[in-house]
Amino acid sequence: MQFIDEIPEHFLIAGVDEVGRGCLAGSVVAAAVILDATKPIAGLADSKKLTERKREYLSQIIQEKALSWAIAEASVVEIDSLNILQATLIAMQRAVAGLQQQPDRVLVDGNRLPSLTMPAQAIVKGDNKIAAISAASIIAKVYRDKLMVDYHQQYPNFSFHLHKSYGTSQHLLEIQQFGFLEIHRKTFNPVKTLIALNGSG
Image 1 (spheres, rainbow, N blue to C red):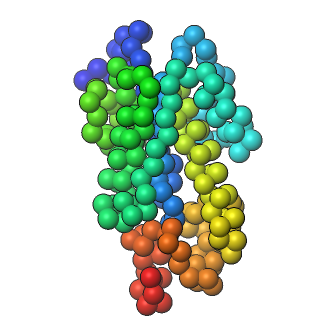
Image 2 (image 1 turned 45 degrees about the vertical axis):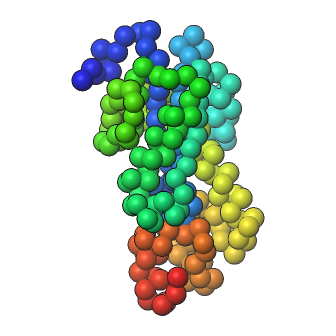
């Protein structure tokens, strides 16, 4: 396996990251980005370390300057039927397949790789180390956050625009007060436990 510093300069490198893996509702979202070396983007970092405003700004810049980018999802049904790891890898696979240009190498955040047709390398904390992975983390996060805002409009009893479907005390309270939605991941704890306790699903 070639490591990062051994990749030829002329290679097209796609960075891949996901968001929403630990959430209690909604799809898991993955993005793939091939940056343009001639159009550097300042300020790229792990999306979790950026403010919402900065992420939205950078997401727009990434989409304008990148050679290619793609966003893909794996649904709640896929998450519950396969498991979150396999669904995440499928979303990553779909994101890479959605790129308009085929990369020579794919660098994936984390320690697991999706099944791909080109060489790939998993990089732990890659969203802090590799610009293309940082870019992928940013556009995936902005995309999924917008989905959560839409969910709040559809289900106003749930503050998806605030907790983004993570298992916060507010979200758990909403589930207990208003029940489960079709977008909730039924195989996830504590949702799974609450379903069992309430005898509903």
